[in-house]
Amino acid sequence: MKIILLGPPGAGKGTQAQSISKRFQIPHISTGDIFRKNIADGTELGTLAKGYMDKGLLVPDEVTIRMVKGRLSEPDCENGYLLDGFPRTVYQADELGKMLAAEGEAVDTALLIQVPRDFIIDRMTGRRVCPSCGASYHLVYNPPMVKDTCDVCGTKVIQRKDDSIDTVVDRLDIYDRQTEPLIEYYLAKGILRVVDGTQAIPVVFESIVKLLGSKE
Ligand code: ADP
Ligand code: ADP
Ligand code: ZN
Image 1: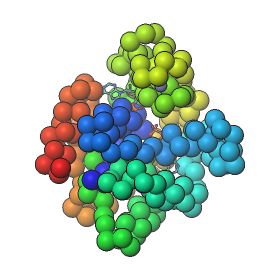
Image 2: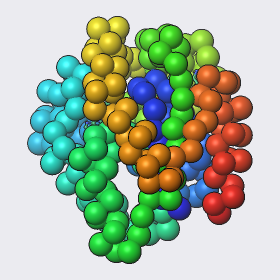
Image 3: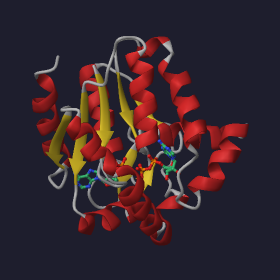
């Protein structure tokens, strides 16, 4: 089972990915999380990525693709995976497709979490994340059980630097120009599925399970 999550920043990809990964027993691969981990560890890749991320720009395709190829070749990806935040450009999608085709494989489902623009700013500016495990929370819609503390690992949650209002606006603009075309791209391939992301978190998850359930 190879799944891609599509949707604007703030759609709920990371939130749903955590539950999907658990339910279907496939690794959740978030390129944003991998970049943030590299920044925290002070690696060369992290230093390079930070310059782009802080400005809300995409990390260059070649760098991102190399990193993803490395990750997908790890043993836990043998029975499938859930990609969150990748591909983000048509070029990345083509490269992923070529890589899989070389092994006689393909993406099974591109799952679009559809959320209109008016929901997004509110979601992103209220987002809090765990710097340790990547879990995503919201001040109002999904607060941790203990104030400011990650439910999963107990670390103090933080606000991402790129979730400030100015950067959010830039990221949405980049999404429209570079990532949104992927909806047409996967529609044309016949593997696009759409869920309504405006419902409550568990309701969205149930819609996703219904959609993916038939794929098991
Ligand atoms: P993405 O990974 O697509 O950028 P996240 O999963 O981090 O999005 O969600 C963005 C913010 O919106 C987080 O603060 C999250 O808690 C909140 N959120 C996610 N899904 C919903 C939902 N269905 N209803 C309300 N808030 C949500
Ligand atoms: P969000 O959860 O809001 O959609 P992510 O955590 O997925 O954000 O990504 C944060 C930042 O990491 C992006 O704004 C971008 O700078 C970088 N990034 C993540 N994935 C990619 C990718 N596939 N290609 C290029 N840059 C990426
Ligand atoms: Zn955590």
